[in-house]
Image (cartoon, rainbow, N blue to C red; front, side, top):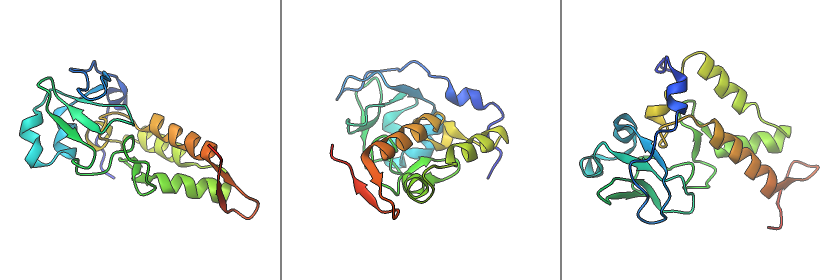
Length: 168
């Protein structure tokens, strides 16, 4: 991995949203131009500009919006977005390329996962690049913890290691 982030804490600061999501009204998280450059196609990049917000609402189809009301929706980003797509092939950590399915596999096979510790080690080694690589422009550890919690709550593992969906 590249050594990209000498100041990991910079990616964890929550910047004030520049606009409310025009679809759900969520205040979201302001993202930097470097985030947009990495996740938005040329087709939409000029239209979104550099003053954009990431919508944190997982039920909302909007990924990014700007104060002018332009939106980029789920499916219009270059990669699927953790908060918007519950699939197992979706990255939960963009810097170190851990997928939701990796968490599920660990939990099924071992009953626990060391992926958060692997990420923390990568961060400590200065190898994260959250502001650029993560569509939300910030650290993924909260998303990873939430994914682990959801998997544990919604899936029971039987004695043979097979998954059984819990009644919701």
